[in-house]
Image (cartoon, rainbow, N blue to C red; front, side):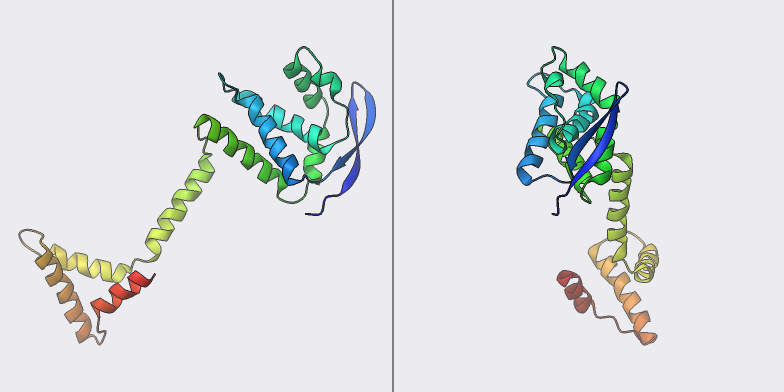
Length: 198
C-alpha cells in the first residue's frame, strides 16, 4: 500500500487551521482503529450503536492526522467534546476523500464485524441481503435444464395412483425414449457423473 502524506485545511470556530494527514494505515494502526471504535460502541454493560459513526469519524481524525486532540480527550464530557469537534469540522470528510482505494470500506466492514462479534447482533443491510438472495437463486437456477424438467413433470403428471420411485423412473424412461426417437439419446449415468463432477 502506498501511503502518502498530504496537507489539508479545516475551519473550527471561525479559525482556519492547516493540518497534515496520511492516506493509509499500517496493519497495527488498523487494529487499534477497529478496537477503539468498537470499545466505545460496546462495553461490558451497554451497546451504544448511536455513536458508532461519530467515533468512527473521530478515529479517522485521531489516526490519520497530526491534530492535537488532547483538549477533547481530557474533557470531562468526552462524548460531547468529540461530537462538537467532529460535527463542526470537515476533517474526517477531507481524509476519507483522500484515503487509499478500498480502505474506507475495509475499516467500515471491519468495525461492523467486530461489533457484531462482540454483541451477536447482525445488522444486515437490505440491499446486501437482497443481493445475496438473488445470487443464491441464480446459482440454483443456473444448472437446471428447464426443457428436461418440464418433460419429466409432464410425464409425472400422467402417472395415476401413488408417486413411487418406479413411477418416477418410468416417467423418465418415457422421456428418454421420446428423445431417442428424435435422435437425442439420453444417458442417465453420464448426466449423474457430470453433476457429481460439478
